[in-house]
Length: 237
Image (tube, rainbow, N blue to C red; front, side):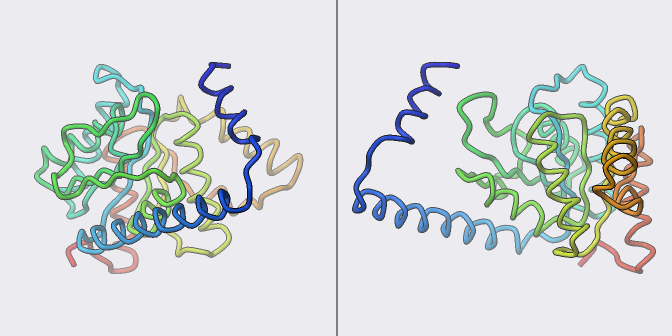
């Protein structure tokens, strides 16, 4: 554990009187509100978008970087904007593809102690900065008409399962969720089927239909387009 993390733990357990706690919480509420307000105001004017998630550590020479760029390019040609976490790696690839396709390129950036700074392919009026993960996730889900999960780490898993949980529990309307990369996701999906479903019965078989596994940009975009074509919905509104 780093000295910085040890200091954070000590500060968390430091003695604080009621006035300190109350003052800190009050200002925190206003900061959270301001992030929601800015997010709602800017995103409400953007129109239908698809969120693309994935690792910030993926390099341009990686095949998944290239697939993410291609997916974003093809999505904007279908009339969708692209939302990412605004950082490097997969996020950069998706914003790059959206900008290359002359579509809307949105970045919901968050202040992190490492690896996160906004990339250069976000529209200047569509880069929003956050301090709170839960506010950022709310904006992602509220303004997305689809979710594409590229290979990633804990953050990608967090965003994926949050989306699946909200759909599963009918807290939001069902929307297409696509996982790209059989090689990457097949181990997790096998665990969901055998351990979570068959052995422990913690989900229903129908829950595994909430997402689609693909390997190509064409198949990922097709699933999004086909989902909305079924309901005679188009993104050009």
